[in-house]
Length: 284
Image 1 (cartoon, rainbow, N blue to C red):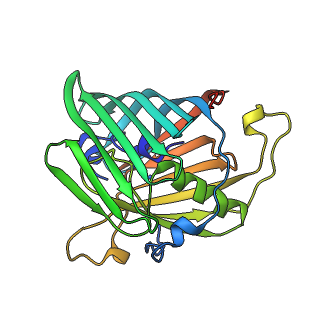
Image 2 (cartoon, helix red, strand yellow; image 1 turned 60 degrees about the horizontal axis):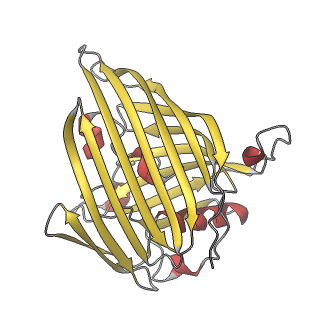
């Protein structure tokens, strides 16, 4: 599952926060370390998930969630493309209902140095947010994001930053090497709040089920990801709570079948309903 999926999936307040508390040290990798890990092959696929309320905290939080999310990741001749579309209706204890639709799409170059991104969302039928732009990284993972929308917005990406496909490749590589923790900077352009850093706790490997769908037969790990926004002023970053947490069962081909996105006051579960492979393009 792409990391952008959790952004904008919660209440209006949570949705404006920067996608999934985890008491892990969440420091960026040393300059260039994130780029040094070997790349791994991911499975191009299209997946459809049902969205439901997993749990709620407090008396005025969300009491019901019903929705669907479609996720697509595919290889391209010059890189990879990814897209997430979801629609979710949330009912609050007050009786109010929020219906949100979001589409996020991006393209990342094969070397992980370039990213284009766009996001459009509506809340109760009214346009809520529009984001688009491009970003570039050098070999050390340092660079800039230049937004077309919002206009005149430019953000510095610190050394060690990764775009979505490269981040997933590095995470899967860490899983295959039985590393218990993986941390890195992250940017996907799905929010104007700025880049993030992600601290990931990786569980022990679980053997595959030969009777499962062919895309879900391999080894998997329980993965807990805590997302923090960079540039949060003079706050002590290693004592902050994450913006959100994402817990999932992640297979070593990059496919996830069970996902929980935790925003603090409530958590939303995404359950896999359908998955199918995407054929690679014919490139010269």
